Length: 115
Image (tube, rainbow, N blue to C red; front, side):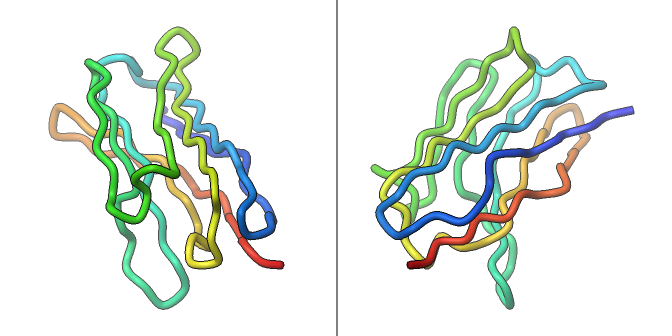
């Protein structure tokens, strides 16, 4: 059974930082492209950042320069370091694993940026 479990969300003030984690089980983590998506209320789910098996990264324009995606294959864990957070970053953040015709999603973790 594949599980992606996100953690690290919460309430943070504008300008603050959060580090999201996604622990994977039931898959060979190292052979999947991993990504973070987010969905704000009333909006479609959107890609935030992606990291391939070789470590190549892609970021949404809104995340460039502020967010860093990384992975630790030994720990089966994906990370998203988010700095300089803005109210518009408020959303549910989802972990995604893709490859070999399969896509897996976590249950999401809420990030709320407000003063």
